Length: 95
Length: 494
Image 1 (spheres, each protein chain N blue to C red):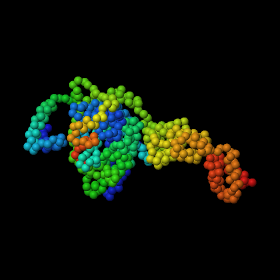
Image 2 (image 1 turned 45 degrees about the vertical axis):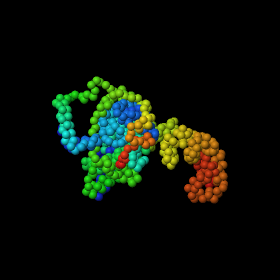
Image 3 (image 1 turned 180 degrees about the vertical axis):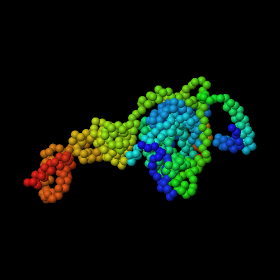
Image 4 (image 1 turned 30 degrees about the vertical axis):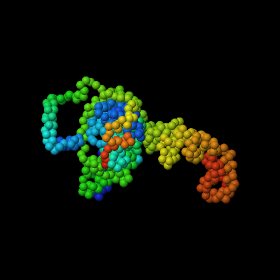
C-alpha cells in the first residue's frame, strides 16, 4: 500500500486538517514509512487465527437501564465558544 | 405468497414500454429505553435543550461508553420478532463524519458484524396477496443530536438531548414493488415493534424514520441504479415519495439520461424529491472497530429468556382470531393492525359474540374515532362499556337499532349503557300486549292504507315504520313484524 499526494489531500480534508502545499509530499513519505513498518505484520501467517480483541479475556461491561446522568446543561456550555439559552451555537449549517 | 423476484408489482407505463419499481427501505427505530445506549442520560422527548446530556454524549475528552444492557435486550427481542438470526458476537464500529450535532466526530454503529442477521416480514395487501419482505440485518447505533437552523439569522443551534439515544437500523431487502407495498411494509414493521414494546413507532416525533431506496428497471431485468430518499416521516409521504421518484427516474431514462446514485430529500409540501447537493461528495465514513468497546457477546440463556417472554405477534394473533372467533381474514387483519385495537377487541369480545364485537368496532367506533381524530386508546367508549352494550342487545333489553342511538350517547357522555337505557327509557318493548295495542291503533288510523295493501304487499314496511314510531322505536322489530302480519291477515281476510 502506498500513499500518494492525492490521498494525503483527501484524508486531510476528511479529517478537517489543513495541510500547507509544501507539507503534502513530506507527509505522504512519512505515512508511507509508517505503513511500510506496519506492513511487516503481514509476513506472519494468521490463517485460521481468530482476531484478538483483548489480551486478557474480558467481557464488554454493561450498565442497567437507569437514568443516572445529565441535568447540567449550564456546565456543558462552559467550554463552548458560543451558546444561547443552553443551545450550542455554531456558524449556520445550511442544507 | 410471493417474494420480490418474479412477481408482478405495479408497473409504470413509460413512452418506451413498462417499467418495474424496486424498493428497499432502511428504518431507524428509536429503542424504547429510559437511558441512552452508552450513557446514563435520559431519553424522554421534549426536554429542555441539553438537559439530558452526559459528558459521554457531549464527547468530552476521556469519557468512555458503557453499553445499556436493556437496549441490547430490545434489539434481540426485535430480531426474534422478525424471525431473524441473532448473532452471538457483534462488533461496534466508528462511522466517521463531521457535523455540528455529532460532537465526537463519529457515530458508534455496527458495520460488518451487526447484532441481528437475516429475517422476514409478511405483509398482507388489500387484494388478499401476502408478500414476503426479507430483512437483511438489524444493528444498534447512536442517534445524533438535533440542529435548529431557523432560530437565528447566522447561527445554527445544537441540542444534544437526542445524541446517543439508541437506534435500531432495520434494513430490508429490495423486495417491494409498489408505493403501496412500501407503506404496508413500514406499517407492519411499526406494528411489530409496538407489539414487542421495543419502539413506540411515533413517526411524528421522529422515533421512527424511513430512508427509502428506489430504482426502476424493465420487468425481469437486473436492478437499476437507486436513489435514496432520506428521512421520510409518515406512511403517506413514503407512498408519495416512491410514486414521484419512480416517475422521475422513468422520465430521465426515457429522455436519454442516466440515473446517478445519490441521496435525495422529500419535500412534503411540493410532493417531490430533490437532490441533496451538500451530500453529493462521496461518503467515506472510514469505519473501524471502536477501540473503546469490546465485541458484544450474548450467551444462549440471555437470548432464550427473551424468546420465552415474546408476546403474541400480529400474524399469530390474526390466525387465532380467524380460528377461534371465525373472523374473516380482512376483519382479523384490521383487528390486529394495532396492538391497542387487538386488546380492545379482545376485551369486548371476551365471552361474547366476537363477530358482533368486530362489526361494532370497525363500524360505529372507527367511524367516530376517525371523525374525531382519536386513537382507540383515547376512545370515549371503553371496551367495558361497549361489551356491556352488546350484552344488552344479546339479552333483548335493546334492539340493534336502539343500540345505535345508545352508542351515540355513549360517545358523547362516555356513560354506562345500562344507565343510559334506563335513564332515557330506551328499553325495548317486547311485551306483546303493548305491541298489539300499537298495531291495532295504526291499523285503525289508516284504513285507506290497509285497503292499498291489498294490491301493494310492499306497503307492509310502511306499517312497520308507523308502529316503530308509535313505540318510540323501542319495539322489537321482529315482534312488530309478526304481530302486524297476523293482524293484517285477519283484517284483510275478514
